[in-house]
Image (tube, rainbow, N blue to C red; front, side, top):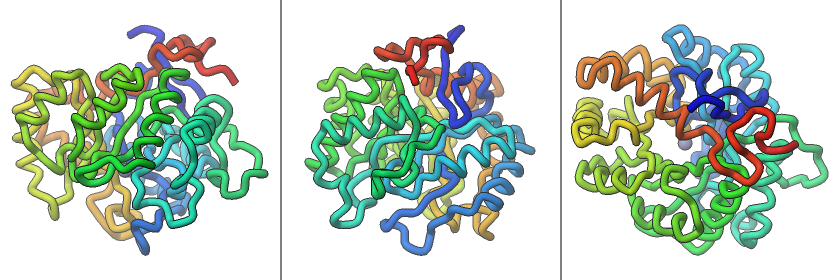
Length: 329
Ligand SMILES: [Zn+2]
């Protein structure tokens, strides 16, 4: 797709320049849902990223949403220090990530959408509006996060999905939805489609928590992207199961719908915090095994071509995929 553009924290970039992309990860995070697992240390993040770059990582989509310790200033500093393009997120997580009393719980769709649009079009709010007077960071978000609970989409989560749809319609940004333990996939697509979102603007994350190939083939056939992001999480299942799942999906003709991310959303998952598997795992450990299963070209499609397609701005009122007209400042 010549001319397709992504928005990174250091500005618009041709999607073709992303290279191997970790389609869902975290550089800085702080959420009440994961006490003791917060990380927001620039030096450690740089160390983690440099290790991954040495294995061939080209770009990261940083999916920390509003209210979860998102740090536009540190993402910019990291991107400038390492040269790694970082696509940041706006939007909201599922209910569990907001403490009681947080403005996100009761905000109407209009306010939720307005703040998504500020992040996408003008610059991310440095304190996620807990201190509304602070000036915006120059870094803009380039993707929209939403989330649903296990087996159900709560009323506030529906409002946040509707707000994500408004943000996507205006800017052409993709919507990445946290599907808790891989549930509610069809319901999430139904809701977003009813709000006018094209299926190819929808990315369902964590589907590999429920590695059910028949369900995944159904979802891929609807045109949404499926993101697998629990590689190296041996507590859930061995990587061999995930390799089996990817192989089945490729054989079923859905190579073009697959994305892979590490989603290292806990301090314990990061080598720079003395944990694991760490950000180098994707290319140092998982990709070689995947190549032996599905071949070099298919791995390249999943890690390079698919994310370039999924995260490029498509058809928004203010984003046309052209560098000069993308999301007006
Ligand atoms: Zn995540």
